[in-house]
Image (cartoon, rainbow, N blue to C red; front, top):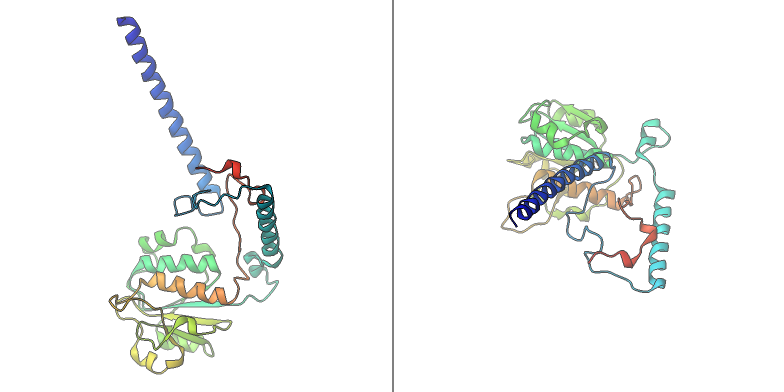
Length: 268
């Protein structure tokens, strides 16, 4: 019994080590897939996992209908999609969207906004002075490796900005605005202007432009939203009005195919 017990204990120890090694290998492989995949992983988001919403059509007719709808939608998106690489080749005139940050103070916010601009093709304009330097490590970290895709322009002050963008269509975002940001129909080549985190935009600028000063609705007890969140909300409202025509409007699963949905594979 003593020998049998020791052998069993030894086998369990070896098995545990093997499982640990296998887990490390799987973790490394998973990280490699994350680095090479072109799409964000949404598996940790609510209802991001397959079947977590509880939707499970049982009949073959429903399954075929879902497959056909997914395929038709993807083909429709592909037929009207304009790839961002074509913009650099000059094959067409892309509808321009401009984000303006006036005297930004927090590098992480500017980095996040830079990433939003890179992902949507919007141009970023920064009016000095800034509360950080362009080489700030926190700024670069927030923008990750998307800086090479960014169209960025700096201005010495507001006067310099208005002089160099003369004739632009400007929309000022402020908690003090008299109307909602969704009340506006945003034209091509418009400028969405945001003030510094601590004070916002100068009130004289808002007062002189009542018809183009807008507010993102929020609870009256909350002073303001985060600057990068506000910019993202505004950008996607404009792009929604433009029907997202210059963006990729569909995604792909890593382990499944939208065109081959099988309810029998549903994870309970």
